[in-house]
Length: 612
Image 1: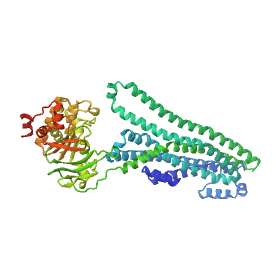
Image 2 (image 1 turned 90 degrees about the vertical axis):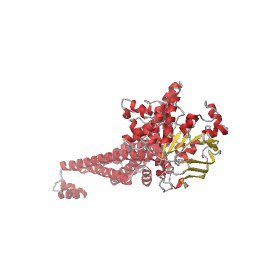
Image 3 (image 1 turned 60 degrees about the vertical axis):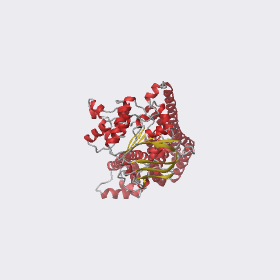
Image 4 (image 1 turned 120 degrees about the vertical axis):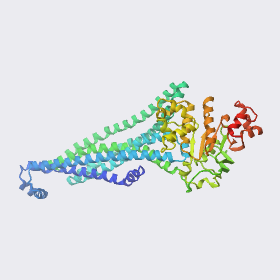
């Protein structure tokens, strides 16, 4: 068991020295407690002998050792000093208990803080496949509720070892007093343990149900709180509240079952041990004719073992009740560590001189149908140019997008930057050269300047202003009463959709990365906001040497692109400029017409924007 405790504690990064220290404090406090209780025997004998130390030395050989020990520290044996010795031992015991509790609290909180921080880092660094598979709600639950229960499991296991130390220490003293009575006591204790076996098995089963209920609750809360507005506007408040009540009831019922099982232990253990004590009194007097002081000490030790046995039962049940939580957390940590992205390249990424080439790239999702998300895709994103990816939903645009920063890797084919396989680049170096703005802006509740700096924490205020200018965000930011120091609100709720989109574009631009990836930046914008963002894209194209790759469903956004790549069913079905694709016809020309555009070459004003 001890080896298992050390091994399991190691899975939560708890150092072995911490366990050893806790057990040392437990052993020292137990030794002092036994010393204090044992010191009561000579007190009783001293009183019975009327203080005649010489008689006690003759009657009991070990009294001579006691007299010599007191003489060594210049003391004489007296009732006061005997009582003081017992008191000192008990005070030292309290000192060790205090030290153990303080140290245990520090170690426990340290383990939880360290595991929580490491778990967050591990999830952030895990590959996108793992993040796709496990929702945020499960991870949040495991790093909060289940982690606390997992810590209880580890410290319950350590406490059980401590209880074992107490039990063995007391057992040695009890055997010294009467081996026969000790054997009887052990038999009764064995009966008590056997009576609790069924309760412990039930506890283990309920603990697994508690983990499942907690995970379901956390997942539900994270998802619903993120979409509170949708719930209200959809008129589904009552249904969601009822679901919350159901999940809460399920969670409560399982916790109540655990506490009921603990209550059962109180009923089982105490009568057995008290009954045992009464039997001991009778047997020790009627059968073994023990002296009064030894009967008293034996009963004190047995009664002292009552709370120890009850604590052992509670601790064991608590350990069983939290075992599933421990395995949930430990397995989660191991899985995230295993799922960590592993970069194999060492080459420093310094920018794009010629272009990014996809050469017959094929990719399939392991948990989806056998139809590839990308199939033999070959295209080139020219350096310093704007390339648009268009096509119906499910065409493979986002999958292709994810391959440039190596969030996903091809099953076959190659991705080359200036002729170098993308796998040859150091992963951190590659991603530092890529700026990204998602379809839905991820805006934090911080001052606007801090959100923009999220792209580059070392950016100066002037760097931020220039990025905001380029993103067409400066006019609305500078019109705010507090300007760049204005709080964005939760998820940017103080800003309009177009303002959030331009603010997030500024965050991407402040990185000054050679590659800019934009995922459907105008999909949820009104016409005016779209025009502002389209103007920002035109300025980026004209004023920087950035390689811009943009996914677009609203084709009016990308008519200015140097090249448009049309994708369908994971394949490249055509590519060229807006004019060329209109002339060729096909999906692009049809989609542009459906969105209100004319199936004719672009007008003169738009041609001027493209520089033709």
